[in-house]
Image (cartoon, rainbow, N blue to C red; front, top):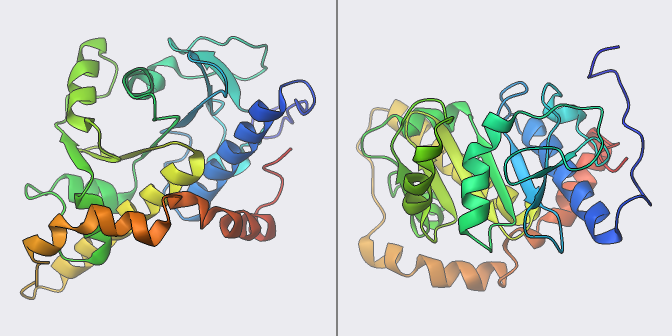
Length: 257
């Protein structure tokens, strides 16, 4: 039986209520990434810290499509990518290299989301990086770092540079590679990625128009971070998350199993 066809035994009632909620929200984030077309087959990851722990995390089963991930199929691992709970599914420890570095360095980064979306990779190859040409871009630019490409992320030596380039930001553009966001919850990381991806898509389309672009003025850029707090009421992804879950319930239910 293929991994995609096998059904995970339900863990509801076998883990704490807090962990189950985290599992449901993370599984929803995986399916939403697929729904919006940011997935890259079975590659890239979204990781989330297990509540009330410092060194345990949830991550996708390696080989399972994002649209198939469920709360019970998520694998619990330690900071080195090793399974700490029985699971019929494998994980890709190498794929956790980026995530483990950020989780270890940022206590607030309970969720780390990484994508190889076509728009994100396209902009990551452009020398100027993200341009201040849209409202979405201004939100990203107020919290954005850049990390130069060092090859497939397998080298432990890269971790300090990755962490330093992210700093205290929410958004990180991985040059020639893709996009990364961090959040206190999967909802926060997802909304950040939604804005990041939208900013990149707008830039790709605007540049394709071959017309002079109008940049946002620097004084406006300087006030964006404070303005964003007012708009989101400090909740960021929490405002949109219930609606996103309803959308997922209509279009791809079963993530909460």
